[in-house]
Structures are given as structure tokens and as C-alpha cells.
Image 1 (tube, rainbow, N blue to C red):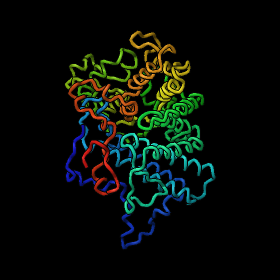
Image 2: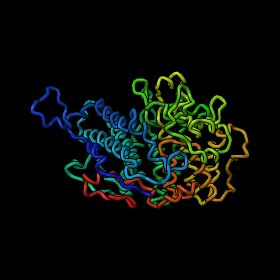
Image 3: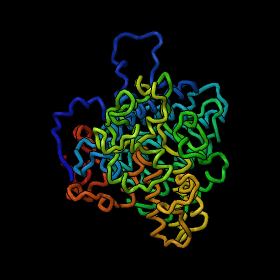
Image 4: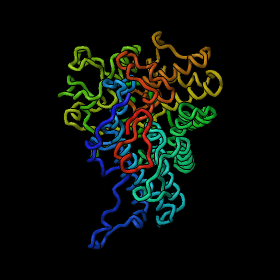
Length: 481
């Protein structure tokens, strides 16, 4: 169910739709060192600076995904989602993704035009591959949130003077696949001096997830299951990634560039992420703010196991969450594994995972099951790696390992549930799984929330400011223009 909001209340966002432009062109003065769009990306360092700027839009202090989980509250994990989805839901993420794309497209255009000088072909190819990887990531997030969106590339005319309509979902995915395929062919296996950069394995891992999504709603192109299986298998057989042995250690700072974290948004001591207090209950340390709490029904559905203790905070200093002031559990992943001193100093250098090896194993298991008409032994082995670690490598009757005797449907549902537990609160993954599997009404357990359910809930609204500025855009069904 959707609600409209007053457009006038949001006029402050008029700076945004697609980008700010270069206002310096209108000045009478001619600064000696002025760098124009045509001359900016003339070195590898300048291209890298554009990519850093693109990521800064997405992962910034109190901006982007630094505080960007609110649009995904309507899944079955967060507290506060009631399926009464506001007309501004996701506006901030739309804006930062298009700002990011602007930075990337400028760099890609410069590379293709031959303006980057003094580098060998391998370096040029890797620069271009990084840009295509990042652009694909942005559009993959956008298309899953909003459906078809304006497809602005390095070859597009200025979107301010040449407004664009929404491209089809299929066309957006075509660009994503093309960009990631190129990235996977040109990116290195690793960057020894810059471990946070995208790699060949990260490109293949995200491409596997792209194919898996294309096999499900809304495209439902089931031939992509086999492509997802193949791409995930290539990651698994590369020998570059493996699960951190102890589930307690997965999100510790020393593993943020470890064998499981394939790619994500990076934080450093010089560029910290949003205060970790948003993830913590008020009883923790000098006091968390309780912004991102976990739904109690979700917590109670999670079987007792080592992973639950590692990923969720259900008690603190002997106090059960039912006696917290918030009366909800919390997600440990993003605050508990930094030092308490750093927490109390409002300092976090935690990274935000986008793709990790556990995700790839689960992608493979789901895709192989669906591509082969039932669970293969390889699919079972992949998901059981995740389950075995989750249980602390002991048999757990509350969460047994999967077998080839399961039906295709049973196995598929079990893998989706496994994704919910393993990837809890990570980058909207649960919301995207709910949408592509079309199960929102099934996982919404509260009758008062379910009363708000509509088939239109599977897409976020196109921002009203953009609709006002670009008459070629059309709103998603269920939202008022």
C-alpha cells in the first residue's frame, strides 16, 4: 500500500535528479588551473579519483548506504516495516546511484576517447574494467529497487538538456551483463597493493547474482539459472576464496579483506563510516541509538546455533533483549566486532560487504538446483559448507544439513531461508530475495502489516522530484504522481 506526499515538502532535493553540472563554465574569470570535463580524466590517477568519488556517493558518513537501510525495512527482518510504503521510499538511494554513475561515465568516456596518456594497454583495460564493474553495480541496485530506469551511459547526451525515459528492465540488465562480462575478462585476480578494488572474482560473483535474478521475477528467464551456476562455479574453482573457518571471525576487522569478503564499500581511519551506534541497543557500551533493530518474529524463527550468536545480539551482560528498553534484538555484524573504545568514540572503520563467498555458495546451490530439476550433490555440498559453519561443525537437529533427497521446491525454499540468516541486514539482500521470489505476502506474518500488502510493493516509487523535472518518466504502479 502506498502513500503520496506533498511535492512542495521536497523541493530542497532539486539539486539532485541526475547531477549538478559544471557551473564554473559560467564564470567570467578564467582560473589558471581550471580542469574541464574534457581534460579532467587525462591520467590514471584522475580516473581512479573519479571512481573513488563514485563510491563516496554510495558509502558516505550519514549518506548513501552509510544510513541507507531504511528503504528495505519492509522485509521480515527489520523492525518498523509495515508495507505502508511512502512515496519517498528510496529517493536518497536513487540520487546517490545516479551521482555515482555520473562520475563513472565521465571516466569511461575519457578512457574510450584515448585521453588517458602514458599507460600501457593492460592498465587502460583495467581502468575501463573498474569503471564498467562499478557502473554495473549501480544499475543492478537501481533496477532491483525501481524496475526500468533511465539508462545513462558514457555515450548518452547530457541528461539535463536531453531528458530520457525509463529503459526496459531487460535493457538495463543487458548493460549490466555486458559491463560485468568485460570487467570479468580484464580485472586482475587480486590487487596486492589495493585489496579493496574490484577483482575478476568479484565481477563473476556479482554476475552470478545478476543471472540468478534474471532467472526469477520480473524477467523469469529460466535459462539464466545455468549461467548463474556456471559463473558461481568459476568463482568456487578459482581457489581465491573460501569461508572463514569460525563464524565468530567473519566480520572481525582483520578479515575485512580476507578470503570471504570479495568486494564491498571500504572505510578507513581517515574516512570512517556512519557512527556504529545506529546498530546497537541503548544498553551497549556508552549507549547505542537502536536505529536498526531486528524483528522479534524473525529472531525467534532462527534456530539456536553458533551463527545466531555471532550475528545477532539477543542479550548483553546477561540481560535478554526482552529487557532492553527497545525490547528487540540487534545485528552484531556492524558494530560488535570493533573495539568498545572505538564504539564509545563514535568511530567505525567497518566495511560494507556487497559480495562475499558465502553468498556465492548459496547462489550456486540455488541455481544448480533449479537448472538441474532438483538438488545435485554439488549444490548440496555448497550450501552445507555454509550450514556446517553456522552450526559450529557439530550436528544440529534444529538446523540439519541438506540432502539430495529433498525435492526441487523444498531445496529452493531452504536455500532462500539460508540466505536470510547468513546475509542478514547485508545490502538489501533479503528484500531483493523476497522480491525476485515474489514471497512478500508469505513472509509478512503480522495481520496488521499484511493488510497493507499490494503486488505493487515489489517496486519502490520513482522520486517525485524527478517526475516533475522529467515529463518522460512514468511512476511505478500504486504510487500517485
